Figure 1 (cartoon, one colour):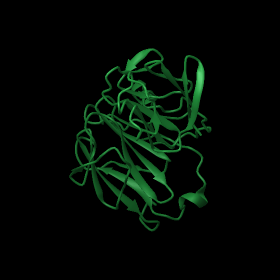
Figure 2: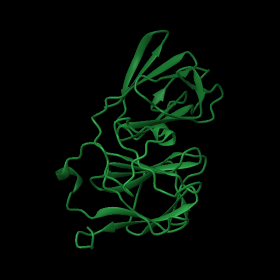
Figure 3: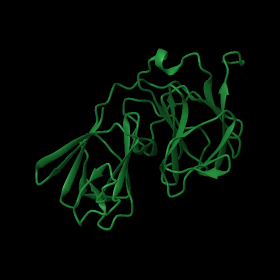
Figure 4: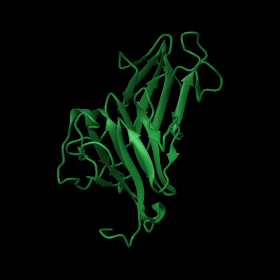
Length: 248
């Protein structure tokens, strides 16, 4: 399990395991990590943890958020990254299980700089949906070990079908633990496969994805059969494929 180590002037103040999906940091007492210092904004930053990956976002703080000395607005945390908030330091430690290579989609594996920036393990294959181009370029998947008994192996498989743009009609099987969809730098979301269903979560971009005509918020949302998702200007339909569906 990943964890955060809060310190100041080399003195460790607290260790925080990343057990929540969202961990807020700020001066106000309602934050998960409260730092009672005037250099820290009331709601300074947030860390979103999805499976074994963590995304840091500065919440328009007054004095900014830095990672390894560089000012950031959004950042995919890597093992041993140091988040700097005034005189305080938060070290990110990632306890990562081995990643298994994903299956092919369009029979093409491409490791791209954009996909790498989304936090995919260098040992995992990263897929690009051919022809997404400027509309919504990257779809990357990586797979953590799954206990079939705990994930409902007999449950219908989740699918995504593109319904607008140049890739209309293409389908993607959501068989992995985590699937990243969108265009880095514009809008990115992830769909996670959990024991009780498929959830979509916003991870990058000023605007949030749209689900059935309604803009999502920062929380994870359970997907229902035939939900329509819009990410980076591309519409796609999520549906559940039953075991008796041809090709299942």
